[in-house]
Length: 293
Image (cartoon, one colour):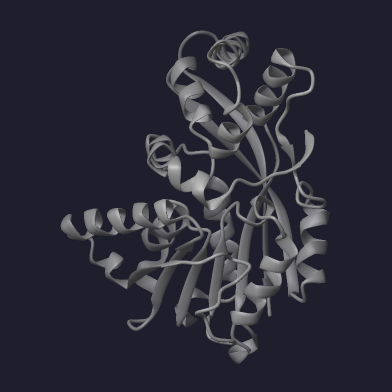
């Protein structure tokens, strides 16, 4: 991967928020690549500080609401009556996706979403959140995408409560994934100098993530690898989902139309070589981490 940092601006995430949300929700809750890691992340959070003790749960870097949705699907019945859920993101487009999801869920009769509010916030600057005011924070595949992951961890620790043994953070990151390997290989084929930006130091290993959390002041830190997968119907649909990712858009935005078409074609060839021309499965390994203030 290149030396460029692995992040896209809030404006880029906003521009591609509808396509990103569509790509993610086109995968069922059973097969999306982030589902297994984020379920494991929530289970570890619940084990460390039960969600039955929640006052406010803040889903930072919420994107279109994948973690918020999994939280409500799996744990709404255990949340105290007055517990609230805040979904925040630095991208206005992503915040709007959560608002639309909430409206859709409420219209369908899912009252659990009445707990949810949204906020436009950068995890490094949670300015409207008071010190020691949040019982639980979730951060699905967030910190390594920010310009300063350590600053985000420190800011999350600030807002977590000191009560009842300290508030708890749960997060996830990537160790490796077939779809990332494919992207790196294809980009280097199109241009030897072109590749995905690098992961920040320590965020692509179980030990590294543990060290980052501890360095930010978290206690009782537990990290673990989690196997996951990404099922797809055809190579063309898989490539469309990958191309919708804002980070890849940042890399290919200055390409000629010919080179962009070549990237898409080579990606489809890579998938066909691995899994044939129909349905397929790509494998990945995520990292989950939990800790207390």
